[in-house]
Length: 376
Image (cartoon, rainbow, N blue to C red; front, side):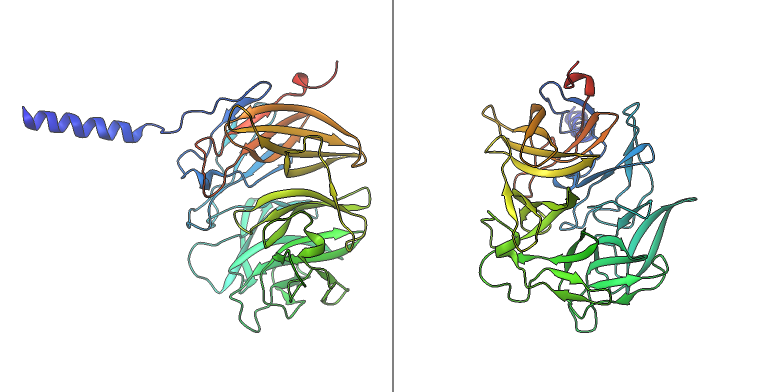
């Protein structure tokens, strides 16, 4: 009898372990749950770091390079049906970013599993996703960009002399040429008025002290002399990053964020001139921006603020000039949305959380249909 009780107890424990410990999140109208594709991963690793619409599908990035999760599969969804599909399995511990470069979808190899002399990037080609392990000394590949018929990579190397962190390729990434002597990690590449820039982690106080925005002069990256004290307005942290940079109506618009991997948004900034950025006020004073999209002449901003009832109040705003704003919708959720995409007027949002407070709702994919917010 005792033995039978022990067997039943063991079976009960096993069955409990098989159950999903995190029930689907409850969200307020007009949001609806599409699915929770990363539910087998630990909560923080479910962060939906990026969403990218490409050729009729929306691709989803997730993972946790700090705790060495992975390998990470490239999930995607069909916006017409809302169906989620698990796709190509990368050799990464985190997929943080998608880039459409010269009409092709790319993934920088944020944190490859195992040790290899060269770093990764992935390209969606005619035969499917292809791994290119060609970037010299790339412990991390943080960003990719096209400029002047060349492909550029911003990477993190081991920091050793002779292992530069900005590289260019004239043959679609088969071979790479250094375009700087800098060895500190470079996180972000962006263009403003046909000039390419690269940004490391920036100190938000005092002189740049070597952590400066760099500008490509046609041959090499050179210093602009601009550091975080100028480029990261309203950042209380001692250091941070330029997140989600894009060009809109001749200005660079970006999220000012503290930290590097587990980044925390502080404000929305816009700069006609990079030496004079300004903070852009959102309609809700408590809301901070997480993601940006441009569709034609309209900029959309995904933002979140603490909800009086707990969790987060999630907003999507639209503007044509960075001065006048229109709130498309808002809803309550257990946690903030870190990324979003749009297709046919419907918005898809990916929930996220912080490293210190990983929410059980992290990784949920939500949808807000155009019919629920558009004027008749």
